[in-house]
Image (cartoon, rainbow over all chains, first blue to last red):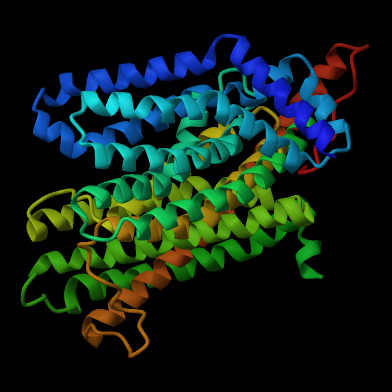
Length: 223
Length: 255
């Protein structure tokens, strides 16, 4: 069983790293969003330090949304998706593996870039670490929730915008707990661990609901 | 087996024809009584004055926007589990009504908020979660519109509706965590309602009137949707007949 899973994982990872350089484009987009914010709110370093975690989280959310439409679309265009549906492997597991590969190619670079971008936003080392940790735990949830939207819109020709509209309301809890646990590490009105554990729980819930719902949607869109 | 009897759209339409005039009648009566009580017999609030009357529209609309999502979730289970042919018609026609009630709750709420809180909009927990609900209704309606095949669109929308139904309590909880200013629930409580009977009775009658209005609009919208699908099927058949040699018209389960 591990043989095909590993093969699928490596294939997806290789495709997303080599074709189109999606990882680099995602990080560039993240950088662009973070660069644009000071032009909007002004170059006040104290203000930027206060809203820094929120800016990083919103940038990560937008960068994740941008890459999601490629999750199933390329496989649908060349017919691989139909083969995966007919292969008789558990489709939920296939989707979980694809999400994992997609996250490593697009989500992990965002997490790695976050400390660097935090310097631009005048974050101190403690909050820099807190934001990076919350992004590490929270961005898989964004990818897994986004998989539902990606599979619902896979048959549409221009589904990217609709995907974002469908996914953003579902991603609100992740955003709230990601930002509030990062904030808790800085000003601590509540201990850091409480919202952080809820964020972990949201990721685990997304790891169950995302693949199941997305597998159902792919099965219906195929027949 | 009444549930399955009405899987036949023709039989369902006959039922609608019988039930609808009665529902409309009761709805008009309930609105007449409720509006009269709300505007003339209900007392002014000692703090809020006449603005308290906005509540008789606002609170039933807010209840209805949640009930409407419940109806859509049950219909979605009907689509996915039992493949009931009318379930996705029901879900599809409930969505715009739900969006309208949500919009009404938001608008009346912000009109009431201006004199009371001094601002039209605050990022308070309840307001925010209702706004998220509105975005979800609009997203669902868009998903239905972007797919040509009504059966496939129905199944996709059913999945999204159910994921949303799982997610709405989480959104509610997380937004509560995030910020709270709105007054806590004061009608449905364990130790009885905290508002006076003179205000409670018009409110309950208005809630009944709004619920009846929902069912009237929902049945009418379902009837229109069934007729619209029949027109679509007839057109496809006509198109395939006028060009012989092409494939015959595909069967429409919701015919």
